[in-house]
Length: 100
Image (cartoon, rainbow, N blue to C red):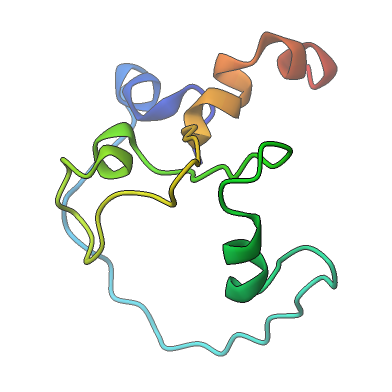
């Protein structure tokens, strides 16, 4: 993540390339936080309930099914979308004040 986004990074004269770096294979040992995620069965039981808001963090085009970047297009019925940029500090003055 870049503070200020990629355009700010480029405007500062920082280097950018489309060449992928060579990476060494690594090992990841994820440690899920209990209670942070729910199962597909649990999600399906919540779809359409008025007291539940399901947030699908996809770009608008992918959420609407018009973008074709992934295998599956669209979204969970009755869900809403937000972009990660909308909650980043650059776009969230309240958070930026707490983190000078």
